[in-house]
Image 1 (cartoon, rainbow, N blue to C red):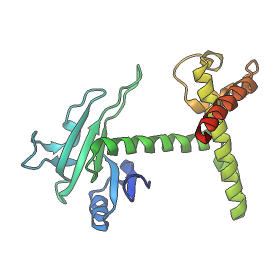
Image 2 (image 1 turned 180 degrees about the vertical axis):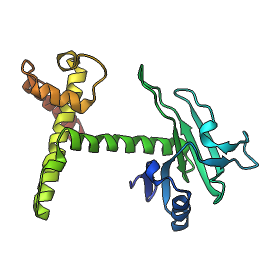
Image 3 (image 1 turned 45 degrees about the vertical axis):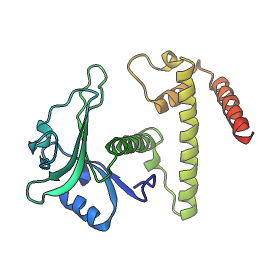
Image 4 (image 1 turned 120 degrees about the vertical axis):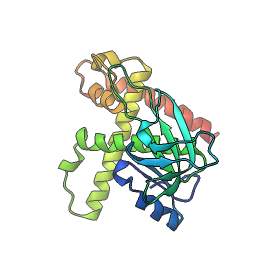
Amino acid sequence: MVLWDYKVVIIADRGFRRAALLKFLRELGLHYVIRVCGNVWVSTSNSAREQYTGILGNISLKEGQRKYMWNVSLQQTMGVPTHLVLGKVKAEKGKKIEPWYIATDLENLDKAYRYYEKRMWIEEMFRDFKSRFHWCEYKAESEAGREMLTFLLMMSYTIVLFLGCQVQRTNRQSLVASYGKSSITWLGISFLNHKKASASQLFRQIRRRYGLVAEKLAA
């Protein structure tokens, strides 16, 4: 759930794709951006420029393309009214990317698509917490302990992100990544663990750059 231009926007992946949920959210007056599966039945309204009735996944999409469908009827039995934005991101070489079928009640479908993209970044963050920071291995019995653990985790994550970004900016990826495209967090952690890399120099560069930003904001 996020708070942005709209009061409340529920953002969810395909695990919450049920038409009954979309109907329930509409009845509550809550905005939603929810990814649905390609095997769902849809039907466009009579006023639509391009008419379509059938399985959503049968609509062809090229890499980098988006399609917009306003006021469609989702799911053959319930016929829930909704908007859809269909998109297929460009895949890295050798990888296959599934299209996104996003149901929303927001009128700005590009904005709905960007909201879902933000959700994917949050998903990557939680994956980093579990696999690279081993969040699940730490135990905190008290509420204060859990708050402190979360605070330390967020601080560590932020520092690693800054370091990973600086590794990219200064073209040092080759020191820690021999092939493929590495994530920002992986670059940061790997650089910290690299025997021949000097993280202190990068941290000084980061501090200097953000110090200049702070001075401009305070002026």
